[in-house]
Image 1: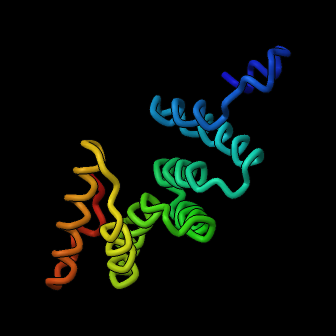
Image 2 (image 1 turned 60 degrees about the vertical axis):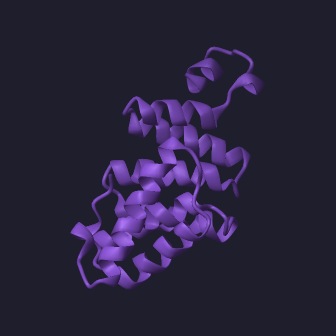
Image 3 (image 1 turned 180 degrees about the horizontal axis):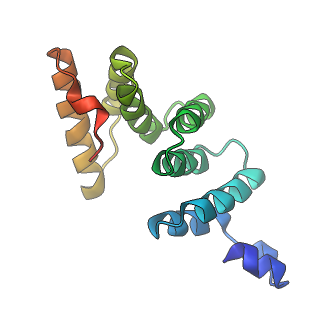
Length: 144
Protein backbone atom coordinates (compact mmCIF):
# COMPACT_ATOMS: atom_id res chain seq x y z
CA UNK A 1 0.00 0.00 0.00
CA UNK A 2 1.99 3.02 1.25
CA UNK A 3 5.29 1.40 0.51
CA UNK A 4 4.11 0.63 -3.00
CA UNK A 5 2.89 4.18 -3.45
CA UNK A 6 6.31 5.44 -2.43
CA UNK A 7 8.07 3.05 -4.80
CA UNK A 8 5.76 4.09 -7.62
CA UNK A 9 6.47 7.76 -6.98
CA UNK A 10 3.05 8.70 -5.68
CA UNK A 11 2.66 11.55 -3.19
CA UNK A 12 4.51 10.48 -0.06
CA UNK A 13 2.79 13.14 2.08
CA UNK A 14 -0.54 11.43 1.46
CA UNK A 15 0.62 8.15 3.03
CA UNK A 16 -0.72 7.45 6.51
CA UNK A 17 1.51 4.62 7.64
CA UNK A 18 -0.31 4.26 10.95
CA UNK A 19 -3.70 3.77 9.30
CA UNK A 20 -2.15 1.44 6.77
CA UNK A 21 -0.57 -0.60 9.57
CA UNK A 22 -3.87 -0.86 11.43
CA UNK A 23 -5.63 -2.03 8.26
CA UNK A 24 -2.95 -4.62 7.57
CA UNK A 25 -3.13 -5.82 11.17
CA UNK A 26 -6.89 -6.22 10.81
CA UNK A 27 -6.33 -8.23 7.63
CA UNK A 28 -3.91 -10.56 9.40
CA UNK A 29 -0.91 -9.34 7.41
CA UNK A 30 1.27 -8.98 10.47
CA UNK A 31 4.71 -8.56 8.96
CA UNK A 32 3.43 -5.97 6.48
CA UNK A 33 1.62 -4.20 9.34
CA UNK A 34 4.83 -4.11 11.34
CA UNK A 35 6.67 -2.52 8.42
CA UNK A 36 4.04 0.21 8.07
CA UNK A 37 3.93 0.83 11.81
CA UNK A 38 7.71 1.13 11.94
CA UNK A 39 7.49 3.76 9.21
CA UNK A 40 4.81 5.57 11.21
CA UNK A 41 7.02 5.42 14.30
CA UNK A 42 9.89 6.91 12.31
CA UNK A 43 7.72 9.99 11.75
CA UNK A 44 6.47 10.15 15.37
CA UNK A 45 8.92 8.20 17.59
CA UNK A 46 7.06 8.80 20.85
CA UNK A 47 3.56 7.98 19.60
CA UNK A 48 2.01 5.58 22.11
CA UNK A 49 -0.80 4.59 19.71
CA UNK A 50 1.74 3.39 17.15
CA UNK A 51 3.71 1.57 19.84
CA UNK A 52 0.57 -0.15 21.13
CA UNK A 53 -0.33 -1.36 17.65
CA UNK A 54 3.20 -2.63 17.19
CA UNK A 55 2.96 -4.51 20.49
CA UNK A 56 -0.26 -6.13 19.28
CA UNK A 57 1.50 -7.26 16.11
CA UNK A 58 4.43 -8.64 18.11
CA UNK A 59 1.96 -10.54 20.29
CA UNK A 60 0.18 -12.01 17.27
CA UNK A 61 3.42 -13.24 15.70
CA UNK A 62 4.61 -14.78 18.96
CA UNK A 63 7.25 -12.21 19.92
CA UNK A 64 6.02 -11.77 23.49
CA UNK A 65 9.25 -10.31 24.88
CA UNK A 66 9.30 -7.65 22.17
CA UNK A 67 5.62 -6.95 22.80
CA UNK A 68 6.29 -6.44 26.51
CA UNK A 69 9.17 -4.06 25.77
CA UNK A 70 7.03 -2.13 23.30
CA UNK A 71 4.10 -1.81 25.72
CA UNK A 72 6.51 -0.58 28.41
CA UNK A 73 7.92 1.99 25.98
CA UNK A 74 4.38 3.17 25.17
CA UNK A 75 3.71 3.62 28.89
CA UNK A 76 7.02 5.41 29.41
CA UNK A 77 5.99 7.87 26.70
CA UNK A 78 2.36 8.19 27.80
CA UNK A 79 1.16 7.07 31.24
CA UNK A 80 -2.45 7.45 30.06
CA UNK A 81 -2.07 4.70 27.41
CA UNK A 82 -4.52 2.36 29.15
CA UNK A 83 -4.51 -0.11 26.26
CA UNK A 84 -0.83 -0.72 26.96
CA UNK A 85 -1.68 -1.59 30.56
CA UNK A 86 -4.27 -4.09 29.33
CA UNK A 87 -2.05 -5.80 26.79
CA UNK A 88 0.93 -5.84 29.12
CA UNK A 89 -1.12 -7.33 31.95
CA UNK A 90 -2.11 -10.37 29.91
CA UNK A 91 1.39 -10.93 28.57
CA UNK A 92 2.71 -10.82 32.12
CA UNK A 93 0.05 -13.32 33.20
CA UNK A 94 1.25 -15.71 30.51
CA UNK A 95 4.72 -15.45 32.05
CA UNK A 96 3.34 -16.17 35.53
CA UNK A 97 4.08 -12.64 36.74
CA UNK A 98 0.71 -12.26 38.44
CA UNK A 99 1.59 -9.41 40.82
CA UNK A 100 2.86 -7.21 38.00
CA UNK A 101 -0.15 -8.17 35.90
CA UNK A 102 -2.51 -7.18 38.70
CA UNK A 103 -0.88 -3.74 38.91
CA UNK A 104 -1.45 -3.18 35.19
CA UNK A 105 -5.04 -4.42 35.36
CA UNK A 106 -5.69 -1.94 38.18
CA UNK A 107 -4.15 0.86 36.12
CA UNK A 108 -6.31 -0.10 33.14
CA UNK A 109 -9.46 -0.19 35.27
CA UNK A 110 -8.66 3.13 36.99
CA UNK A 111 -9.36 4.97 33.71
CA UNK A 112 -11.09 2.44 31.46
CA UNK A 113 -11.90 3.28 27.86
CA UNK A 114 -15.51 3.81 26.77
CA UNK A 115 -17.56 2.25 24.01
CA UNK A 116 -19.04 -1.09 23.07
CA UNK A 117 -15.75 -2.60 21.89
CA UNK A 118 -14.03 -1.50 25.09
CA UNK A 119 -16.79 -2.92 27.30
CA UNK A 120 -15.77 -6.53 26.73
CA UNK A 121 -12.14 -5.71 27.54
CA UNK A 122 -13.16 -3.88 30.70
CA UNK A 123 -15.33 -6.82 31.76
CA UNK A 124 -12.52 -9.26 31.00
CA UNK A 125 -10.04 -7.17 33.01
CA UNK A 126 -12.44 -6.96 35.97
CA UNK A 127 -13.09 -10.70 35.92
CA UNK A 128 -9.38 -11.54 35.61
CA UNK A 129 -8.38 -9.15 38.40
CA UNK A 130 -11.07 -10.53 40.70
CA UNK A 131 -9.89 -14.08 39.99
CA UNK A 132 -6.27 -13.14 40.67
CA UNK A 133 -7.16 -11.35 43.90
CA UNK A 134 -9.06 -14.45 45.00
CA UNK A 135 -5.92 -16.51 44.44
CA UNK A 136 -6.80 -18.03 41.07
CA UNK A 137 -4.51 -18.36 38.09
CA UNK A 138 -6.79 -16.38 35.74
CA UNK A 139 -6.48 -19.00 32.99
CA UNK A 140 -2.83 -18.10 32.42
CA UNK A 141 -3.64 -14.77 30.81
CA UNK A 142 -6.08 -15.80 28.14
CA UNK A 143 -7.18 -12.74 26.20
CA UNK A 144 -10.70 -12.46 24.80
